[in-house]
Amino acid sequence: MIVTENIAEIRRIRWADSGLSWGFVPTMGFLHEGHLSLVRQARAENERTAVSIYVNPTQFAPTEDLSNYPRDMERDLSLLAAEGVDLVFTPSDVVMYPDDFQTAVTLSQVTRPLEGASRPTHFQGVATIVAKLFNIVQPARAYFGQKDAQQSVVIRQMVRDLNFNLDVVICPIVREADGLAMSSRNAYLNPAQRQAATALYRALQTAKSAFERGERDGRALRRLMKETIAAEPLARLDYASVAHPLTLAELDVVENEALLSLAVFMGQTRLIDNLLLPE
Image (cartoon, rainbow, N blue to C red; front, side, top):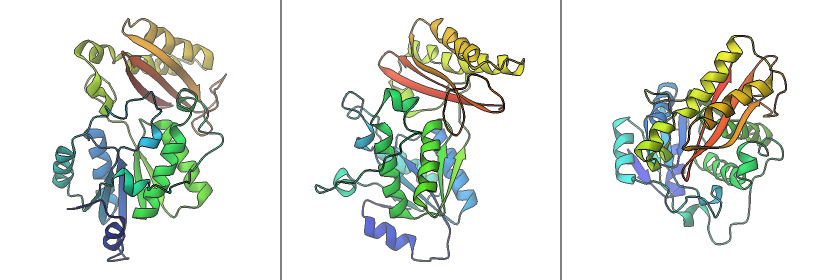
């Protein structure tokens, strides 16, 4: 496994044999089973696999947890080596954002609701760094997790709009045994908060069960999620949404498909989760 922060070396290795297909998994490190599931799918579907580890500062607001974001590069590299990854890109801020850097990628619509309403600068940072990584690695396929549902919509839109020559593959959420979606930020939770965090999955399941019984009123489904979160004393709701899975517009009536999603604070830690209907 080759580990480098050098863009020229990434490109040299990537194009050493132009006939090989490359799968790419962008990450911010502190890897868990969710990340590794993406790596395994990338390996299964491509002849070579690349992973990036970079905590991107431009997707964090000044009030967010950039300086405290969990990091363990040595452990991450050990896990990736065990998975048979070929190439790991570990750039520094200077490499990705040199002093004269002045370009940003913005999307005008799908970045506005949900996470965009709570974190208005977030998706510009995400789109910019992902565009840079796509240009550096130039993979045939790039792999992302469904847990960041809006991010997946944003990246697919960007790929269509800017004609990137790659396929975006969205992989299922990987959950703990009690339903909590795996996330690097789960490391912030104390034991009581960790137990309370299962309220997110319960809220989604409550709305899903109502849908399966025939409920199609978007307001009623949102209310069920909100009530489930409100019943957990340690939880504070940011948003609960029943939206179109592609446009992210809130639905008054679920006619075909819907994305159930929510963001919830456990203390200072903000967690997100989602579920597609029908599942």
